[in-house]
Image 1 (cartoon, protein in one colour):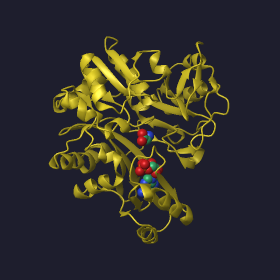
Image 2 (cartoon, rainbow, N blue to C red; image 1 turned 180 degrees about the vertical axis):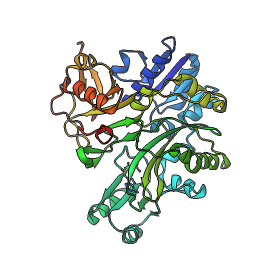
Image 3 (spheres, protein in one colour; image 1 turned 90 degrees about the vertical axis):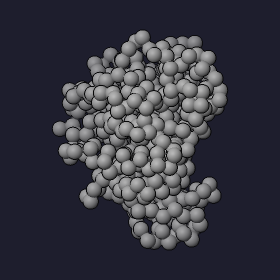
Image 4 (cartoon, protein in one colour; image 1 turned 30 degrees about the horizontal axis):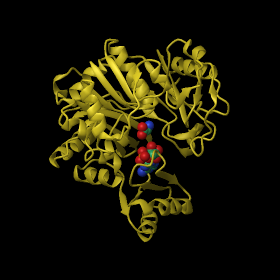
Length: 418
Ligand code: AMP
Ligand code: GLY
């Protein structure tokens, strides 16, 4: 199959690796990709938020499937242009991508579809913010309405910090004040062709930058899959109470959701609650979910894009487990220091069961080496018979990589490794 993947992160590198595991006969192009992706497939430099340009390129190149990785192109309407041009695309139209693009819209859909989620108030003035903070009490949960690259959400016991966060974002639109939900988080990816829904294997992401969930929220510092502690029937329950009602409500409104509904969930003592929806694969959860996928990713995503999801076999996952850890630059997430050489990647890859997905790397001049170009530099992925085994491998591999000032969490999947 001739496939165009849009995006430049570790998620897209993991998607490419999974497609190549399906079949080395796939012809894959990534726009714009990154230095690590460029080592395995062709990359092309295109403005990935310019839908018309991408549709023109995809037509010229006879692309049979476009997979959109990040949210920005979806919210910009790239999938709309591709559908208009008759090219199968995995990823929702602009209107449906509002499930991720606007937290306010997501709450409206959840309320209409009776999907369990935290109580919230959408505030447009600071007076409304103050009264909502009083109503819900500490810890405070304050969310910017639009896309904020993981930086829009603040969970804090500090009233002044909650106030300041709301005051910063209120100029850009509504601010959501939400009740605090306590429990383990679960990321469940659900494929939908607008009608049928098919879950992938659950994963858990670590959002805070430091061990023991300390420090600010990030885009994600590590993940593992599967989740052995989930109660029996959990995925079926989420499909029935969250995914199906949401997908039905979207169709009912004439904005069918075609692509991946990322259900960000909290398992609270009184039941599962949605904390957010995303309209795309999560990063770094994709790295562990796809590592365990045994079915053909290209077939699943093409069936999703072309309304045939009900007729494909359910995805099969390995009994092996997977753990991924993000290597971050000095100063991430506030002010990452970039441009530093990354050494030891070949030694890290020599550890059995290890793969590496690049995120923010570039070639170091004409040399064989890489330099860092952003905050989340790369993710190391380990596969193992159990979590003790996979953790040993992932950290052995990380110890072989040198990047001055870099840091990573040492407690990824610790809670399941016994
Ligand atoms: P979001 O971008 O909405 O996923 O929020 C980022 C992170 O903030 C989540 O992964 C949670 O760790 C935390 N968070 C968001 N909403 C809540 C909530 N209502 N209660 C507790 N933690 C939350
Ligand atoms: N790992 C969280 C996200 O992709 O939004």
